[in-house]
Image (cartoon, rainbow, N blue to C red; front, side):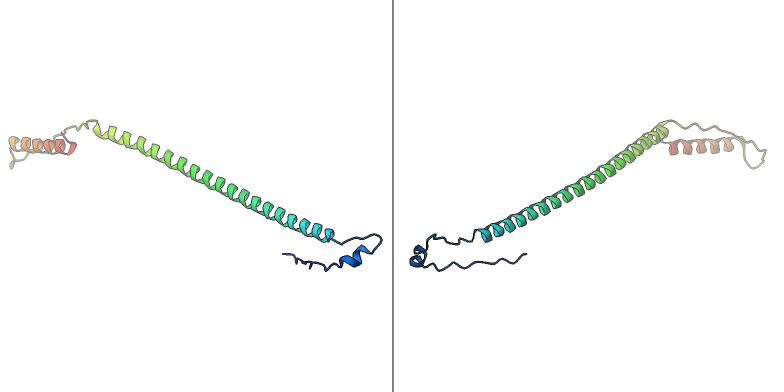
Length: 133
């Protein structure tokens, strides 16, 4: 801040002043004008700094908003892709799974044909239970 010189009021001798041929009183207009000019410069500088700070904050907020909107877009796209994958997975799970039965008949004296047939039925019933039917 600049040093401000305050001018003390003058002691005026009115009798001596009126005796002069051209009486004048120095009102200190020049110092008043320079002080006023300095004050207006300080106010203008303050205003310019404040406007620059506001502009910087606005730019920063716009950048942050853009980053947030970009992140929102990325997350929404990821969410949409996950939904599509989930729908495909549910569709794949809801379609019936077909199992082909292959029996290998091994000639064995210990098991009869009916026992082998029962094992095949229990195997197919287990597969149906796992499939959800």
